[in-house]
Image 1: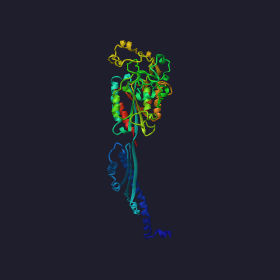
Image 2: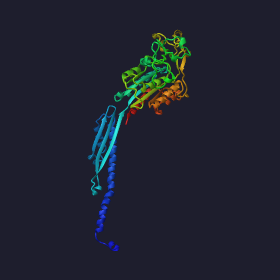
Image 3: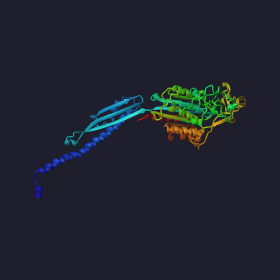
Image 4: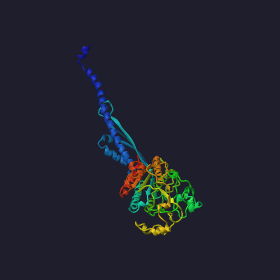
Length: 483
């Protein structure tokens, strides 16, 4: 029987083989059809992702659906079969600070092999979603106005800082952005609002006698006020964080000048703090009016920069935004920019509050020595009448510290480090600028330590501080866009 089967001449076996091979051939060729459909879906998904990102861009003001259509047509031109049957659904949500775009696209490809078994086409489907949101930004700009910033350095700082305001508060970002200015010299002029909050009223120890204010007295418990005093206060170790100061719990500092450059230790009212505003004209006028102050209280400047961003100061800080500062890790990005041109210094107060010595009770018309402190000027007669200008007439209340100071120590370096650590813990983005500082010295170590990462520390070796501010502005404006 087996031999007869092999010798058969009829077509039954051929017909049977053909019936078996047809679906097998369609099945094998169908892999090619499926591969084509998969490739088309992958390409479609890539085009959709690019289109969604372009349409969701906050810098793109064009109609969402128009942008998507143009992307589809430009990038699917070599796949006419897909684009001819393409059905696109666009869902968009456009708000003031965010834009979300979702695209669902369906099409099909005609089969070459699967049609043999009745499958004429394979579906092609792709979806994507893109979002960009503009993060609210709260920025504190801490600027060194110490006496070493005299001449071109202060002028260049004013130009760069003013332009920085324009870049941060541009037309696209101004409504979501607030800025605070903290100029610092020997200390920080906290302005009338915070002076009234922190300093005891007239019932305190007004214009104390020398024996009440002399060396060894506990100045922090004296509740001192001065009839000719400035809007600067004393601080204790516990103040160097972002927490509010105790109400009516800090004595006022008398007006005095330090011994080297005849600028007031407490910055003038033209150089006081300005908090929580996005009024460009106000910020730029304030920057332009800044005057020099003697001393480099980097730790005090940094402290007020931290407090300007602290949610614990909401409702107290004033300014244009009643709901700010926002909570940490909220929708707001908090940015702290710290600029200095010198070494952090110990902070002083006078040995006695009387006119003369270093306590400057001179008439306003004698607020500066003759000829605006021309180098080499003979100040002998001026000193004899209005006090000798030397360090023996001052006493330190905050020691400088050294590179080895730890953040929990009680000196200026430790205070600065502590504030930097706290800023990083609270996800504050910290940029630092060293303006003609000595590379490798303590000031550079502190600025490098404080910056959020090495790329956010800028060493300006010439007068081109503008470039540093430009780079920081570009970085901030890039960070504020997420998605």
